[in-house]
Amino acid sequence: MTTENTTIPAYAPIIVRLFQNVIYDEDRKTWQELISYQQQIRAYFATIGVELHLNETDGFAFLSQPDEMEGQTVPRLVRRMPLSYEITLLLVILREALEEFDVQNTESRTLFITNKDLKERIELFFEDKADKVKLLERFDTYINGVVNLGFLKEKAVKGYEEDVKTYEVRRIIKAKINNEKLEAIRSKLKGDK
Image (cartoon, rainbow, N blue to C red; front, side):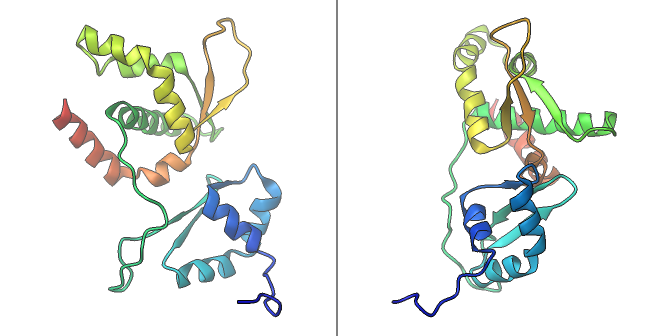
């Protein structure tokens, strides 16, 4: 197959970026191109059974793939992987923190949280001392897992305590874990414990 006569569209780099990861409005050039070409990009993804989610208010875009489209089953582009109890719990805590923030704060859309705050919030779910010690030993690993999922972004903030790290809670968590999914996860977590 040759590509000699094929013209690559101007929005091709954005399509590739969306296949790789979430696009945020902080990447201004890419974001503006995404907004400009969104109809063509949506049309392209529709042909392969993938949907573009574009949230201009919160400044992010990502792809999702329904399990079935009009009776056709399309193979999954990305394999679903189960999350550990601790990472799932952190996601619920972050989602709830973002909800609280949105209710209390109208001037900013950016929530910052420290690893110390997260430790205090997650410890409440571990009554058994042995479980709590095990959790705290691996806590940084769990936070790194959430960072790798794209729901937290570490920020360079100088503070008094060297071991305190500050993270931005990425608003995409509200799209990926909507209210319905949040309730389902809460119910499952209650059943697991």
